[in-house]
Amino acid sequence: MEYFIIIIAAIFVNNIVLAQFLGICPFLGVSNKVSTSLGMGAAVTFVMALASLAAYLLQYEVLVPLKIEYMQTIVFILVIATLVQMVEIILKKVSPALYQALGVFLPLITTNCAVLGVAILLVQKEYNLGQSVVFSTATAIGFTLALVLFAGIRERLDMEDVPKSMKGVPIALVSAGILAMAFMGFSGLV
Image 1 (cartoon, rainbow, N blue to C red):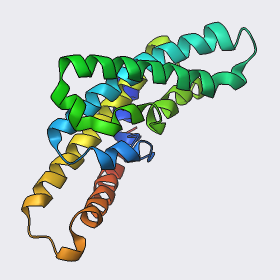
Image 2 (image 1 turned 180 degrees about the vertical axis):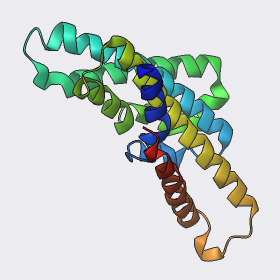
Image 3 (image 1 turned 30 degrees about the vertical axis):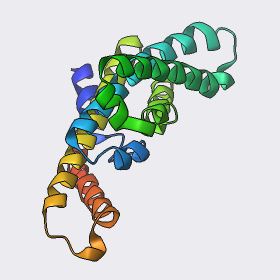
Image 4 (image 1 turned 60 degrees about the vertical axis):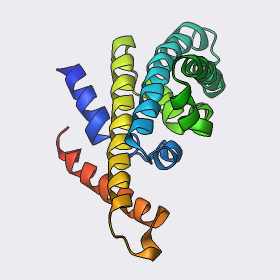
């Protein structure tokens, strides 16, 4: 039951984008098409799951025993950067179209505060290894859900008759705010 609560809380209640407002850059930048959003979500899920595993092991097997916990942020960023480079290489080989569509936002996963934020949250919440992996994967799924929902809304808005002054970024930001408020309805669940 504990893992189920972690999953529901990470995806819906404390959604990293819509409730904690981390990872806004790719949320706004890659959410023009649902297919691109799914690709970015998959890349972030892969990086976040592996980063949490590595962050947990580094924190409790290296940093704490050596009493250098103050190096946590730097070490976590190096781990995330390495994983993003792996994803970039794999995507370039496997799916060149998705690699092109993600463009500059793929390397920006390295500086995506959501990925680093989750790695640090795992340590702060004192999760064990299993909880850490479940939390980070569920958080990444919540990130993907927010990205895909927002991309769907933006695709739909492109087909609608929106006033000229609201076209583009203004209506996107209003829609993002409404989506965030909709997710606030889940806060009574956990």
